[in-house]
Length: 288
Image (cartoon, rainbow, N blue to C red):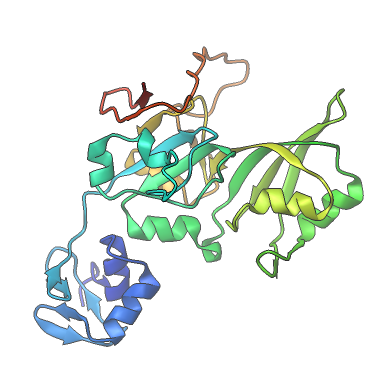
């Protein structure tokens, strides 16, 4: 078998047809054909670009890989659509990008801001979101009061979230700062992605997160990418998403040198207005 061969379920996932687990079910049900022959064994391997794979008679193929970083503002749902007609992160992207099949790799809740990655690469989507790969996400949080040493230790070792019925994995809490107004700030690193996880973790110890912003995913950081703006990632940057080494910023800059200053233009206000997608070179979505 060629070195380029890969498991059939992985190939189906990378084509963006469905998740790897769903692909396994389709194979077991005999709904997948390889070179016109029905395949129902999970160990089957295929060579992308050479073998012809169909599902229910429809040929699937690898899409042109597209991965973008988006600075999600508060007030946008992390979803491809919303039944209540609320603004979604897809309203911040141009039509051509949506038609490429990009999906959010994980989610940020309605009021959380920061780095969100969208991709049409099914395998990348799986690696960024599945806890088994331990892709680290870093957040900046403002708390309504400073946490005690005991509370910090409890949060770092894992707390039980009754909403999901499980204990969180170990977290890393750093850069704890007490502020004069009685509030506090800190950085949180986790590799899970349960719904509203950071907020719920602090709820367990009686602390309210009043502001939350995702700063990094793997080795890719938000940098100076402005609210509501997106940027397509190069292949080397995509590789950083599943690593934890020295990375780059979503704004396209490398790590900032000591003492280096960078001018940042203030982001425009994100008001709820008539939706309009822009396909301009700047990647700036406009709402008028």
